[in-house]
Image 1 (cartoon, rainbow, N blue to C red):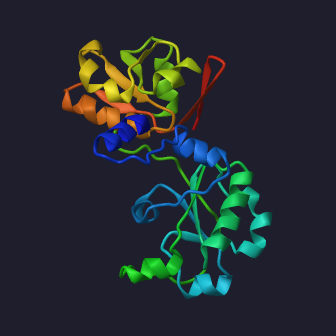
Image 2: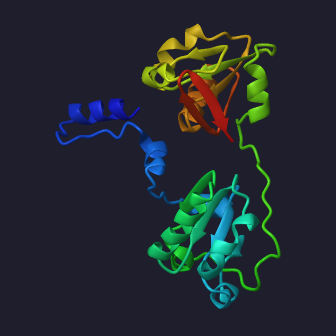
Length: 245
């Protein structure tokens, strides 16, 4: 999608336009941090970690947050569910970045920073919670609206269900590998090529993260086709693909 957007920008008269082809996955792979939205902190299926001191946390923290002071974070690897989306915050972005880097080093599936911390939360009129941190951190993966689980997706790859795998990555991405029994139609061509999709089967859509797959589902919904999308990292190398749930 980025090259297409760059093309539109040039048509509008912009001249200094560049494209980061690897997108957010490439940004993360390079060791860079990403930030969480306020909505994600408020309602996302996440583990929220407050890196401030015990005293600061108990005086007022963002609801749902667990307290792991930065000073003791290095000893808490086993207490964090690393498959969960983990969001950290502290008194400063620099301090939150330190925690983020350590958690990513442990192999956390998805990590991000809430840059505003408690001050930003309170500034918009939201209330803080008080008191001690919960005794343990628990997290259960929840499928969002329109999502398909990894197990069901993998079963459909065998071709024994009334479902079809729809790959909406670019042609270049598909060249690195693709799932068996899949149809490849890049996201920017979906609306033009809707007729190529079987109307009597459910489409299980994937890309490299789930973002484009969700957009493709919106197009299929509009066309009256039944579909769900996979929200997971899909990595392909040397012709083979793996799902990093």
